Length: 100
Image (cartoon, rainbow, N blue to C red; front, side):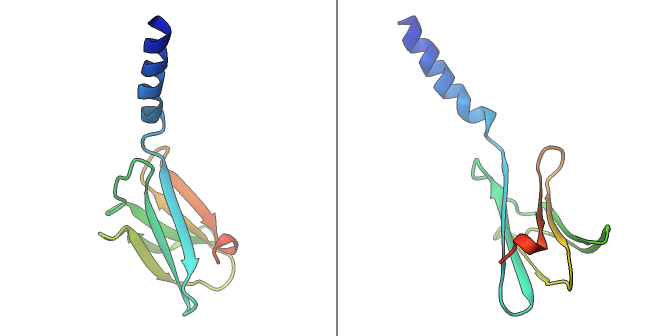
């Protein structure tokens, strides 16, 4: 019985350890724009979460995710980074070269 309770407790607590991981995917629309979609592993919305595009150490676009958990921006020339920034421990950065 103790073994069963320990297993049940571990299974019950395991999801909370990973309950709020930030997620983001970006894709090239083929029309000169990039769309990024964000959210959290527990299903929470990214609506209102800060997003920015950085190039040469400068923010060139500063947006927030909309009610559909997405942002759209003009694709910069050259190297850039797309950044989902929901605060400490919830930051994702994608290099422009990783976005197809």
